[in-house]
Image (tube, rainbow, N blue to C red; front, side, top):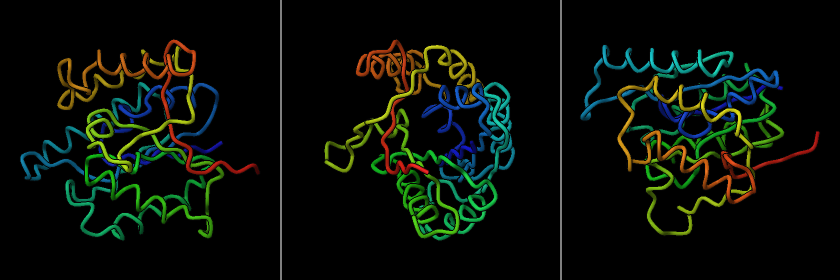
Length: 221
C-alpha cells in the first residue's frame, strides 16, 4: 500500500506517529511524508537554520526508513492566511502518490498552522477528488493537540490504536534527530513524555505501547 503522512512542520511526523511510520515500513508499505511549512525563529525566517531543520528531517527519515520526503516550504506560522496555498500543491502530491491511506494532524490542535493543514487535507482528499484514499486518520501531536483549551472541538478522542511495542525505540531515535525541537521533561516534546503518552495509549487498549488515531474515513475497497 501507499501511505501518505501530511506533516505541518518538520518534527510533527515523528512526534505524532513515528512508530507507526516505522511499522508501515517494516511490513513493506511505501511511505511518503510531505512537510507543509518551513521553520521560522522568533518570527523571522533564517535560511541557514531552516536548512538545518531540513537535514534533521532527512536524518529522521533514514532512521524510520520511509521512501520519500517532500518539502512544500510554505510560510511557517501563516498557513491559515490562505488555505488554498496548501491545497494546490497537496492535491498535486496526492495525485502523484495515489495513497491508500492518508494520515494528517488533528483538526483541533492549538497551533493555527495545524488547523489550516487539516482544512487543506479535507479538501484535497474529498470523496469527489480525482484521487481519494480509502482510509484517512488523524494523529495527535504532543505540545499541540494536548495544549488545546477545554472545548468540544479541541477534544482528541481516539478510536484506532496501533501496537508499537517493537517500534517505539525507533521513534525515539528519530525524535533525537530534531535537536532544536527537543525539550526537557515535563515538556510534552521530551523523550520521557513521549514514552509516557505511548504507555497511556497502550493502557487504553491493552498493549504496552500504542500510538492513537481518530478515523475520519474507512472505506472497504
